[in-house]
Image (cartoon, rainbow, N blue to C red):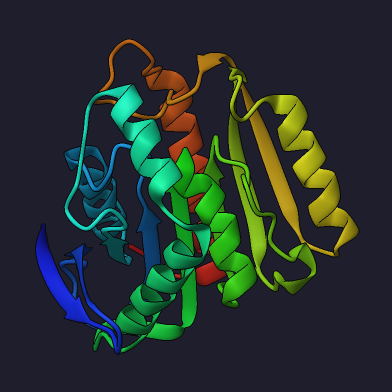
Length: 228
């Protein structure tokens, strides 16, 4: 359904993956933010799935074409990615999405996984998206200004997760609520980090993944609209 594209900002050429719904007319737009593995087929599949439900979905390539299946290399790539650079690239992606002829520019959201989940919250603080979803991702290295978030936040967290533990998720929820942000957070028992990723059978949990996805689509329907 989607396609790899190149697009330009004032500073550099960027890459990404764009998927547009099959039906005609305008639809809400959603930025899909990669895991620390890069813009891998799983993230492209998620982007396609969003398009099949009626959203124009765009996944910016924050690593400039680099991908990996090795945790050590993924950690290295994530650490090399400046938070400020990632935010800048995501804002360029937002601008690209807003200008797409099929996008309702007043109805924008984002969803991210792992590293991308953390960056989803960063993006919500940098741009007034109406809805941001994080899958097992909590801001790291640099916390955003939570009071700058104008939209709603939804989070999905695993029971067994040292990086984005439920305790850290609850702390994040308290900070967001204290800043006046509308939130809803979910814990999935019997799961570990990455439970949504069906390309990793060692952690994928189908029932939890389906429930999380249904909640995500319902959230976007409520906050962004769209009928799919």
